[in-house]
Image (cartoon, rainbow, N blue to C red; front, side, top):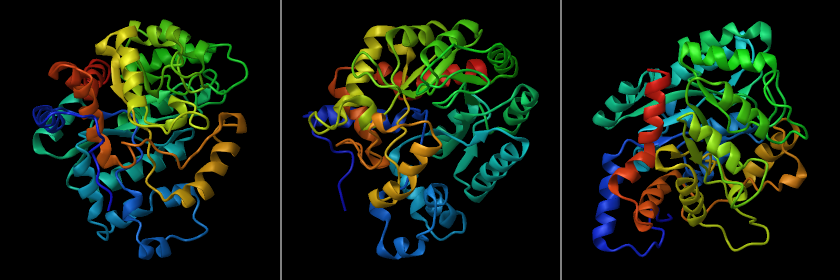
Length: 381
């Protein structure tokens, strides 16, 4: 079994103790979360139980489903070992049926685990941290709302399955353009209406997968803080999923927060460069702090995924290329991970790395979750 949370930052014993305390005592919010499970838990028996025909959705939820049935106690163990207080996760905001399906699945998961609560208000997150449990924030990345469907947004917010909603997911929507589109005209007239409705009902506008002009337009339109839950700095490595300085500054100007990913191929050229490590995530955090200020930076890991590499190659890669707006030139490597972030139990390495780079206790607490908690309280309640 691999050892986690021990990336060699060269910390003194005193700094290791400080990092452990900060990780334990801070409210930690992962602004995009793919699940607590680890490739290490995939025994031959578990792999044999996973049908060869399983698509990515079925494979990704396989262990959670076992846990719901009371057949996989390690699910909570891995949650706890990460140290995360709150995770943002969710489904598709497209039709009434899809919305209801997502709400039912979220409720079923929360009801199955007495250590997991819905985060409807900021105080729910604080309470989960005080109790040593976890809170779930509803999130929608793939948003296919049509003008006639706008009332679904109210329903999604009321059901607690969409507290953050992206304007687009890579490709174009009725709202605006995604970041892998060839052309980005910005927010549509309906996009303006969408942002206005989000502001009115207490939904956080997310721009993580939105195109540059759509991102800037959303920031200009919104009267409330805007976020990019999981992205990176294009100035350090230019890719479609990264944000330009102009976008990052526009988000910060709204009072929003930018979450930095642990996705190797969004942080650096992993095909020709050195082996990627957690230092890359920290480099992007440092850059954002210098550019927009400490109060606008957070974490949105979005990686690693909790499946064995061969299962990811078989299920996720074809879906990413066919329906998620990625293309061969994006050079997705769905099985790659950062040295220092190969498992969700490595989350403490972000805290340790921030200590190694000289951040104060207050600054570490802000990046780990305090900044998002502020935005969540301001917009949602």
